[in-house]
Image 1 (cartoon, rainbow, N blue to C red):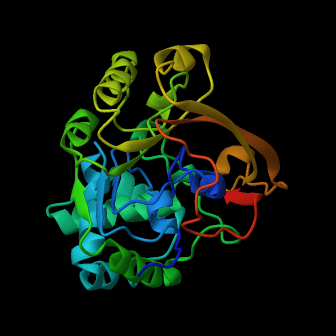
Image 2 (image 1 turned 45 degrees about the horizontal axis):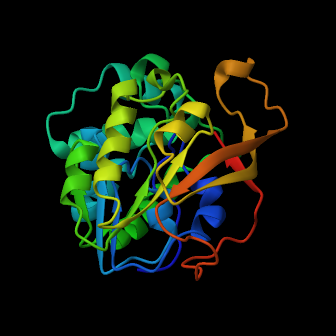
Length: 290
């Protein structure tokens, strides 16, 4: 499957709503790698390369992708009678004790699809499903099946990012989407990303800058600009999106979505202007449903 599909997951900080802008900077490639896959929105939106590698330090996330890839029918069978309710969300979050990799994938998928913004840090993981905006359980099987098709022959690992970059083949293309430099990301992610990790990332990319092409997305800050003063170019990018809150944090009200503007740096080690589009998006402005 080479057609554009959505990520199977909700994911805080994902790049679904910046895909059109990212597309404009992606070069032709035969080996595609994401060291920080997360929801892997860019991978699922673009045509598959000849070889593809998705990595994330979150082992439960990678396990869920692997089960979807290798055992979609078993996953669908286990989820077929599920309903999206606050009680079931609480059960999977607080009571359910998985014993197998399939059990772990079921728990992860259910909580992710029914939590506000897909936040999987259990201390800040709240019920966030809304009938109007969230994918309904009856549509989960179709989501799982098309995701499974796209994931066939895709390499899935849960390594530290440095190992992935070290092992990346020459002439590959890396889309790199780490946590923001200036963000309280411990609230959102199971695994924190310390300041030293940001320094490690810059150092390892500089070491290998002549072996492959990379597009790195980051928050625009003086610290990031200084860390990457050695790159070929930094592009300031903005995009519009709307957040519609569907959880209990607004006392049960369903208010009209609030408009926001994303702003990031696209950091590249190659001439990324006027690339041939690799996938299409229909609109520059999207709605984001949390």
